[in-house]
Image (cartoon, rainbow, N blue to C red):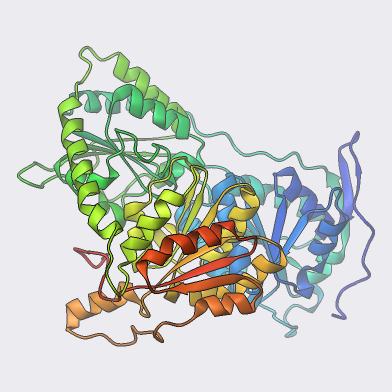
Length: 566
């Protein structure tokens, strides 16, 4: 690139004076490190070379992890934000590099994942003349981010990057995008050394917390729903304290999974339909009242009246504007949940929900008994539930389970109940396929001693399987378990229900995706006998390379659905 001036020298920090000097890439890396970033996810591009120089020359150097498609870099940064609760960092070259990351940015916006994306940008001194990949990127990204802006000069980098990381990591968390013109990326500046940190959560209104406690105390069949933001806001301990102190039955979703450990007597996710349909009060914490929760309409089943609904969020903008709410409050979720526990202690008559809990526990037990037949099914072709019958007993308490698929991963939501918080990754409400390999990369780095199990639909695998090469090159062993039904199962069944036929829903039968993984330097095998799933999983978990267990499943054994998700 002839537009780039000569490279400047390594950043120099006078720690006593708190002043940092260097080219824009060095300054940006210093800010990222101050905010806890350990890895830069990227795909090489000349517009962002100074970021690489800054990473290499940092003390200690920052890890550079290069991928085969920018979407994977951005999904890895998004998953890093979820797992570590600090902003992940993706650095994407100008133009198509940035636009290839859009789906991951949108997913982060919908899921509240803290991440910063630094984009390359055509040089300012050539702007308007048609230089390579000249595109005004922030207006494209602004609708799917907390902020999108250009840092127009090297002098803006320290302050602009610090603002980006602070904003991304503060409630309500999400993605922030900045781009820097190529000529200014190579230029130098100096300024105050960054400190890092986020904005503290808002103090909740104590009176509103008290109102919610009164509603709970007056309920006969209350239900608590814990979502992703309970984990993101660091409120998982407070949430479990409330559940156990109050004795309230609970359902978890998203990264709220594991906050109440799998098998806990108050975790009633397996009796979800009964709980949501017959509750008289549903308290939803840290997740939107979207399609996954019936848009906030509960009760009304088996003669039960409609339930009252309470919504609790980490910030005012996350409170539902469409649901009919009996009460709501926003703010720091730990303070809210601990405040509810304290307020329940002060009610005149402590509620007794034991019979309600017993009813739901009976529903959980009945569901477990019903599921046993599927989890142990000997059907040929293999029923996808049998995979989980073999996988779940092999998952360690600290396992990170990543879902990337439609119908196959729906079964995971039914059968996998994490034992610890922070061990479940799915696309969230945006429902984007192709996030799995990025999530697996992030999980292996964030949890180096844990099991990492990536659940892949054969359709979803087509979006990112090439990034097995990234796992191999960076020595990141991951177990990949594929439910291969040779179809877009989430679309095939519903289209048949609507029209009586389906089109563009079939894939090539029994594709040997494990051979693709082998060609990229990993290992794997195809399984067609249900009795061989367990031994194959054992070989996968014992392997020291990325390993794909490609299980051929029955396309007609679809996840049971009552709606089309609209």
